[in-house]
Length: 288
Image (tube, rainbow, N blue to C red):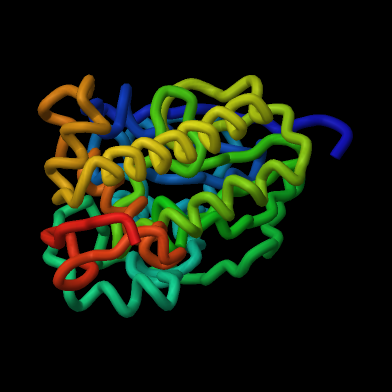
């Protein structure tokens, strides 16, 4: 592409500690518009998306990075209003690694916002291409935050969903989130030279290479902190979270505990820690 198509941002009115200033809905293209992440099921947000269309413009594709309610719940209503098909990797639980599939039945429900009713019209595989008169998007499977998470590349611009954001790190919460997959996906993105990331929440990431390095360093640092905390003796997840996330606000501690468990699952699979009586959020963990 010699020039970029129009790119517009419609931000949903769903601010929270987990969504920042709200979910970013991206509109790409001129006459035929692709929508990335229709967002939460809010009548006002649906109206804002439709109102953003100019004369002669129509929505022809709806793309969902992942099936969390704040990204996918509006898809059925937007599809009904526009007759545009919904594209995604699959349902909310598809794309889990073999380890996460094995763990899932033993883990309690944790209410991380899965859109369990989500079902796309068309399923996308890694590096599938979607195009319009003035754009071309390539789907990149980036599991980690969710097994079926996709990012969408348009040249050297990446619509990065919740995998890479500037305002916050991603929550990785088993069995939906997978720390090993998250780190692999980060490493994969470093193989390309990106000019800009347009994330699912917050402002554009203007220095993608630096942000990828920062996120990788952050996760490796958390891993080292957990191992150091276990060096003092066996501990439960709440005990480890209190030691590692000692400066975290109380209302964010549940999310921090999920991240700690994600690290422990990864460390357990690498035989660096052991869990008694079994790998579970209520287990007691120790160095192997």
